[in-house]
Length: 348
Ligand SMILES: [Zn+2]
Image (cartoon, helix red, strand yellow):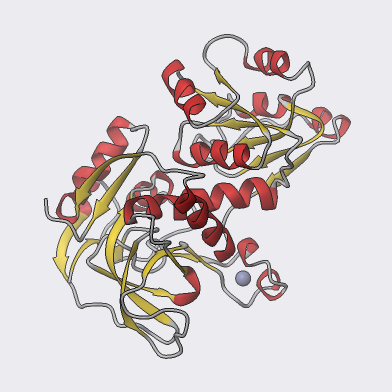
């Protein structure tokens, strides 16, 4: 098969299109003919550069969220058959640790990731564990399924499972125009909560409003905390969704949390080392909750919501497999508002 292989860390020139053996399904695995896979800044770009915090195994085929058609089935697979259309959860829980054993696989600290620690979807075919796959409803296309499987499922887990968001609450979503933040706005709205979106430009704030946010703030225009307090009768928000870890923004995010409220921390691409005002934390009886990883029921929920039209992906453009390096350069240079996909099954 054709695959884009990473043999050394570095720039996009390290991505080389090669002919490699087709994957064979191990016990409990299925092989997909890949329709679509997305480019994720947090995985693909940092893994390629060698800066990903949880390491990577070379040589590697990137691509954390492939979706496609089942074309081979390993022994012990009962849930899928040849021809099924499936999407994939990227996190493979270890199945052994204390969290896994008590049924909290999304909290596994020893998980591996498809496209990071084993070969992913920048290829014509990919083998994945059946326990990581979910059927795509008929009405949902592969492009949307790929994006929804990754970010819709994560937004659901982080807000509802980890953040315990309730319908009567207010939530503020930082990075609301990003892929994860955009789904957080939609999932929060769907749960019945009142949603304040925060983005870095007027046009990105307007985009978050289009996704359903009740209010949107450009944090570069005026005092962010003042604006949030004006929107919430001086109280702040019950839940703050923060995925950047930006040292300038994070202390402001903490100041937006209402008395006895919660902050979900689910990313650190903006730096990750931030100042924490402990007086604000304990006097305010605040909770800071870490969130990462999803479970397959989150994936099922997200694909169902996508098929019903309750949540939707924003897709910027689709590249053929041969132009994967160009696609990554485009993501890095332009920071597009929608997702950029690679479609190995499509010709250029
Ligand atoms: Zn585990």
